[in-house]
Length: 128
Image (cartoon, rainbow, N blue to C red; front, side, top):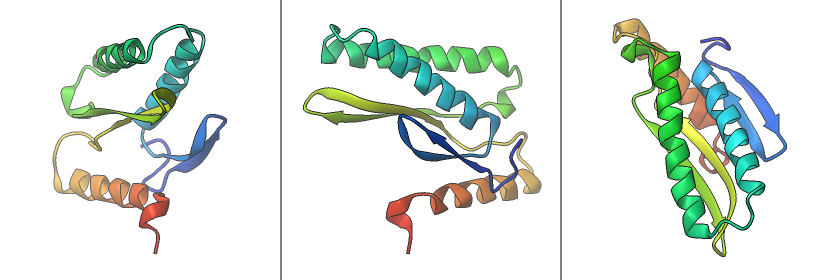
């Protein structure tokens, strides 16, 4: 984990501040930025075609992950795509992943729990 279990907050011009803990958090943020830029340059694309395009980009991201990390134990087990929509217009997208930090052991279980706990702390709706 390049930023430790607590991570660092990153501000972006296209969404709220995001907690970066793992290498994959950074990859997914950059991928979302890349995909949003590509989509904004193709305004003539219909809403349905944009959804199809986003699904293709999600699969492309999975392919890139498989190329970048050969050890399947170090890859995310799930890649999520979140889409914010207003009146059939895609406002923003984000990619996310499951938390997995290597081969399962008591240490990785604790690390994964710490990562998940820190991520939950950054969700405004869950603050007390």
